[in-house]
Length: 486
Ligand code: NAD
Image (cartoon, rainbow, N blue to C red; front, side, top):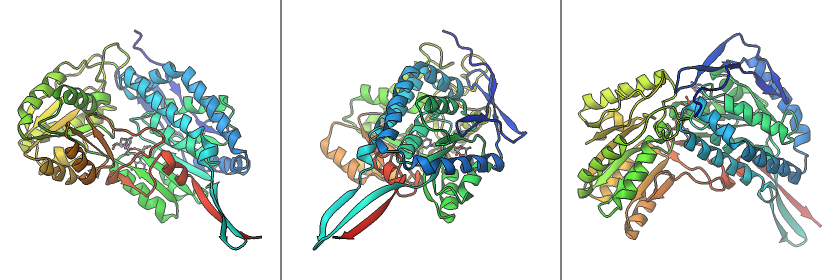
């Protein structure tokens, strides 16, 4: 299979349906993390670029908000078909800019398509509620309206799925949209924009301004942007939430994670090992739903650790475009160095290094870290407290399910958690008592489908309404109440 990549290109912003060169003279190189080869240069856009995009989106809002909802939905039907037609191309682009395996990239495109399919149900989603007789001859009704220009700020780890949590729903609800993609994975965003145009989306409804902090701050402070959707790391999510809300905006900010997998002595270990291995090391651990910690309960620990090590030994590392590769690179050399630093810290903290991935550099000049496993990890250790966001798995040993739940809930994060067992009462205890927002039983990555909210609590989420599902449509609309006497 061909493993070289796209021809390097200098990217532009997408404003008013056109490619518009940024006013900046600063560009950042975008390497393919599997090879180090430069595949693009992304503009570090300026406030001037953002102001232009907001003005265009504000103007487009005047007509888009009045476009009949079924007509907006029809564009999503067309878009869905285009995404399906370009599935392979989109998946390859994700692998080339992010590093995850082609199989995982195919899966990511599917998750994105599902969001578009959900948004195509806009006529039902946008319905209000009426009560004909709230008093004699008086009726009351709730009507949904869009907010205006919405800003979307996205991370590097899901260049397709995360933006698709945002713009399809925002747009079908009648808003116009400005996306600030991760500067580390900007290519896929531009393809999404081209296909939206091809699907018939009017110019100015969807815009992209590439860049970094200045564009994020510009969106957070802009008086013509009433709402912000953010997905990214915890400190930035907290900053975005606080800054956005202090400027009077509606903000949803999805943040970092440290997901625990609890394994009970009655668990089917074949299934547990397969799923934990996939969830810990797939996408190089760069998933907000990655299994970062295993909590082994009772006498399951020794065999579980042994089997997890063997499964990790069997993983093929390399360029995600190559057949059979499971573990690709991490996103940048700095992230590799940070990960190696955490492995060193784990050793210094006294955890048992069961498998050391530091020496495994894979093929080519990419930024690889092999699967790494620590046993006997405790709450005092940084490797347990922090989100490492890399193929590093920590194992904790406890005696009871109650202890396992208590241990898990001691984490600052509360995104996902999984339980491996056949016991109905254990499942109920887990469901009722664990803090995390997305729970799995006997599976590795319990990410909800598009028609449910992508949940999460504590330091994993800032806001009230989550992304996707009915929460998503609530977030992107405001409700007006009309009460009339006849
Ligand atoms: P990141 O926070 O570095 O970047 C996210 C976005 O914020 C990017 O567009 C970036 O340009 C911008 N940004 C970064 N630093 C900024 C700053 N100081 N000021 C203003 N803007 C800034 O996140 P990332 O490394 O791209 O993504 C990985 C993180 O995202 C992980 O922590 C992961 O858990 C999290 N994530 C969470 C979810 C979820 O659903 N909770 C989903 C995907 C990723």
